[in-house]
Length: 141
Image 1 (cartoon, rainbow, N blue to C red):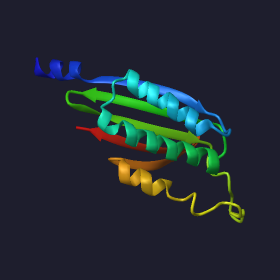
Image 2 (cartoon, rainbow, N blue to C red; image 1 turned 135 degrees about the vertical axis):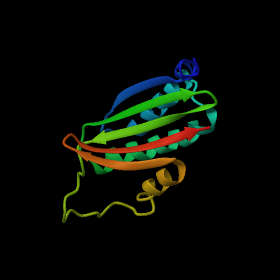
Image 3 (tube, rainbow, N blue to C red; image 1 turned 180 degrees about the horizontal axis):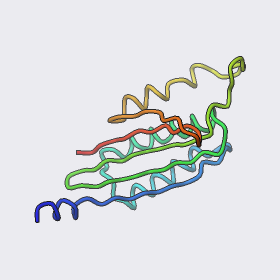
Image 4 (spheres, rainbow, N blue to C red; image 1 turned 135 degrees about the horizontal axis):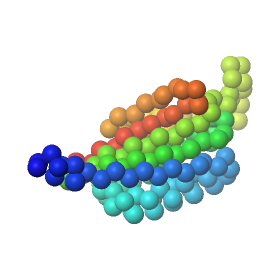
């Protein structure tokens, strides 16, 4: 009976959206994610951190990778909290060895991984035949 009750207390939700490789895409995706998190009643304690992590991962896919890219959110709610997983999949690095980084301001780029590391409970990169998936999980207790 306790196992059945624990199963009933866990609710999983998933949302997938394409990431267009255009100016303004990050803010549009961020607004969409905010609406999805509100619909799912995600714990307020992780919503702002989630939006920042989404912004960093989506920006990375648009600036540094080849399209197409896709965002996948998964929310597993449990009594008193839940786990939100963010996956951003792209076709891999747009720059190849020897490509120039001229025009990329180091003051405006390069901190995304540190931000994700600081905010996420865990995070990583998975290479696969379909490209690269950067992921992060945020846990609300």
